[in-house]
Length: 558
Image 1 (spheres, helix red, strand yellow):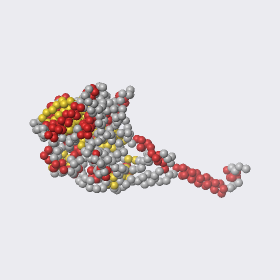
Image 2 (cartoon, rainbow, N blue to C red):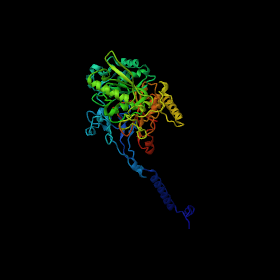
Image 3 (cartoon, rainbow, N blue to C red):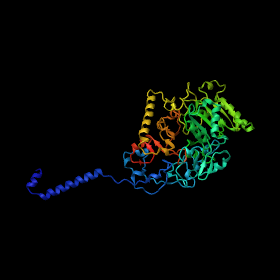
Image 4 (cartoon, helix red, strand yellow):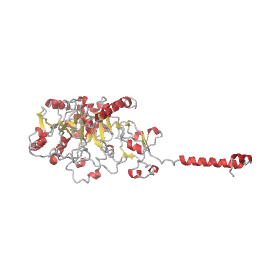
C-alpha cells in the first residue's frame, strides 16, 4: 500500500516524518555542493605592476614583494601547448608557476637575447659575412627581468632629448672618446650631448642635409621623399634632424664595437633598430624606401657577388635614390679607386644611374644613384648578370631569408606615392586588387581615427606628452600610427610573419615598420619603448584559455 503524508499524519508517526525530512535535506545539499564546487585553484605567482619592464620606460622598477591590490597584479598562468589541447580533459590541467627574477651578470642591463647568445656565436664556423651580428635566439626563451642601470632616471622629453640624454640611462663612454673629433657625442656632467656631428658631417648635419638637396632638388624633403633607410647610422643624428622636415628615417646598425650607438638613438627618441647586412635579408618588404643613405657605413657593397647592394636594390622603391658618401667617392688612392671601380661595374649591372656627384668645401663628397622605374633596362643588358629572380620560387616574406643573388623584377608600371601628407590617407599602390580592398582600407583608417580620438587620447589616462617611442605590435594597415600622426611621437609598426603581409601598405602610406615573429625576442635594447600597443594579437590565446590575466599600464590590446 502506498505511503502518503496524510496517512502518516493520521497515524501520528511524527518521528518518522522528521527523519524523512532530514534525509531529504541532506541528500539535496550533497547533490548541490557536488555539482557546483571545484578544487581551489593552484597558486599563481603574482607580479606587481612595476615589474613590467617593457611596457613603459618610466615605470620599470623591479620589486619582488607581493602586491595585495589585485587590480595592479599580473597573474601569469601557463597556456597549454597543442598536444595538451588534444586531450578532452585539458581544462583540468594545473597552471605552471613562473618565478621571474632579475637577469644575472654585469651586462644584464643591456641584454638582448637573440643578439647576445654567445654560446651559439662562439660555435659559428664563419664571421666573414657578419654572421656573428645576426640573430641567434636562445632555446628556450629566457624568463628573467632586465634590471635597471644604477641611477636610472625618467628619460629627457622630446624635443630636448634629440640633443641631450641622461648619462646614467646609457652609461657608455666609448664613443665619446673614439669619435671625439667628429662630434658624435660628448659628456657634460650628468648628460650626454649630441652636437649633430658625424664622420661625414664636418660642418654639421643640417649643412649636410641642405647639401644633399642642393645637389638633387627633386628629393624634396618631407614632400616627395618621406621614408628613408640610413645604413650604419651611428647615433642617428641624420635621421634625428630630418624629423624637422617631416621625413621619418629607419636608422639601423649592428650591435658592434661602436658601443651603444643604436641605444643612444632610441634614448634620444629617434627611430632606430639593430640590424646588419650579412647573410640574410633585412626585415623590410620589397620596394619600401624612397631614399637610402650610407655615410661611411663600412659595408662592402660588392662583396659576396654584390649581394649587399642587391639587398639595397630590393628594398629601394623604383625611382628612389641611394646616397653614398664615402672615401672611394672623393679619394684617389689605390684602395679607394679599386672600391670605386667595383661599385661602378655593379651599379651599371643593376641599371642604377648616377644623377649627381659632387664635392663639398669641407672635402667630403657624395654620389647619388637612381633605381630604374621598370625592368626594361634589365632585359636589354648585354649580360644577364646578376640574373632576374624567378618570382615563382622567390620567398615573399623577409624573415630569416637568405640574401638574394638576383634582381627582383619590377612591375610593368610604377608610380611614385602622393606627396606627403596626402600620402598618409591615399590608396596605397601595394593594396590588394580584391574588390573590397579599398573599402576595407578606408574603413580601417576611419575606425582607428575615431577610436584614438574618442578613447585612446581622452579616456585612458595616458599622459601623451611623456610618450615618444611607440610600438604597434600587430599593426595591420598602420591605422593606429596614422591616427597619432599629429602627436610628437613615432611608431614602429610590426607586422607578424604568421599573418597577412600588410607591411608594404604601411610603407606606401609614409610610415615605417618591420616584420617579426613574436615567439622570439625583438632586436632592440631594453627600455626602448614608452608605449606598446596590440590589437587582437592575443585574441586567439585569450579565447582558447581565459585563465591568463595580464593588466599593465600603457599597453593596449583592443
